[in-house]
Image 1 (cartoon, chains in turn brown, orange):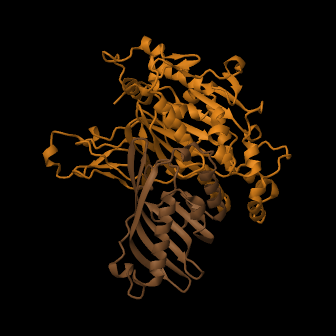
Image 2 (spheres, rainbow over the protein chains, first blue to last red):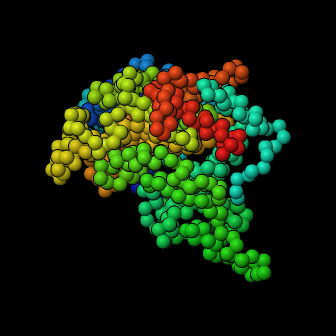
Image 3 (cartoon, each protein chain N blue to C red):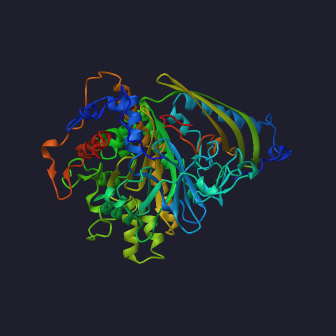
Length: 176
Length: 431
């Protein structure tokens, strides 16, 4: 099924804040801080970036917004995300012990929506990983919904749409 | 295109040579590493026997299709206008372009992107553009897509390149009983595919084939998953010292490993089993629309059947999912884990089954990555000590005959011995 690409006007509506806007800058800073923590596998610190009732999703279907009714690679509420962190930090997983070293960049930021409490930011992520003599690349469109109404910005929702989500995605011991 | 029955080319392992590679309690490491053996496997196993290609729920309506593989050969599985199932080589009869690159969909037929030769859902060649150049050269009836032999059981569709292959019912044999038991997890609804995870690992396909009935690895490799689930689920899968947890060999390379004996036949319920507390909200919602007995039946089936059924050579029916393996080379394999649900069943149940699947399976699941790491390590280790065999001898001394084959504990390697006996028979042309 083909979908018309959004127009440039739709992507950057004039009323949405620019990157230099303090709200946008705070969200971008959060996204970059998150990338830094994930590359360093500091998962407990990563958990503190999340707002209560956060949702962390890596869907398979590139179009769906109905994550609840479709099979995903990750579909975490707070409880599941914390169990995931426990698994990644417990020392009991052989794939985590052998996880790739990763370096990721997020850029191409576009503000998609904002209101008094939240700002939704899309970006492109390019992750380069290396494990056992093999270097690989994972590309993804990422969307963060960031809460801005507290003392510090927090992630309300993160959706990672891998460019190869419907093809083979190899098992990994790290997080996107 | 039928399977070759020519003798192996010079320099390839011959029948007698291959026979020495598989013994009752061990197999030669070359079964994981030798590209020549891999080529022979494609010819003598995947091009000759029944290979699983799809589940009927994936193509319920006329025009539905999905693409699949038989060994290394791409096929299209279609439902034609008369309701028949066709398995067609995904290759135009003109100059060989693939006809369909979509994983699934609905179509009236398939048109080659190169010169627009068009084919019906049953493979008949319907149209050739500018046909004047083919006058007295080609009759359309002589150029249909190549059709494989096809049959299904319990909704599982199998195809074969071999026109003389034994009937599917004979090939499956006693495994059919377990396929019927497996489908009881629908709890009165047909079972349907809800989606799939796909990943590759750097290892031979038989490493994965072995794993489906390898109960021995479960609490070791999956320790981090076991510690993340509720105590009732962990208890349910604590079969290491359960004497009722057994593996049966079923002939023709098939085997079944029972992990949850009380869930082998989900129609049987003595009423003593407590429904898992984690499903309390589902019981509450279902109770508005269903009788208590039906609610209990559905919830007892939430984790699927209490066993893994391994069907040689490429599919397993494992508790609540299908595992499909696709050999890519001697040292690379693609795996699909297909989540199952209840066709027309309660949405809350199908969603919960998706969440259970995501918890263990897939590239970010709590189970699959650890399996994948173990298999990678087997392949890496296989580079060392070419004369040192792989041992599949666990439980040999306690294995017993039953009415249909051999039976031993679920942690024993009975299923692997069955698979390798079939491998040996097919590779040495005994079958």
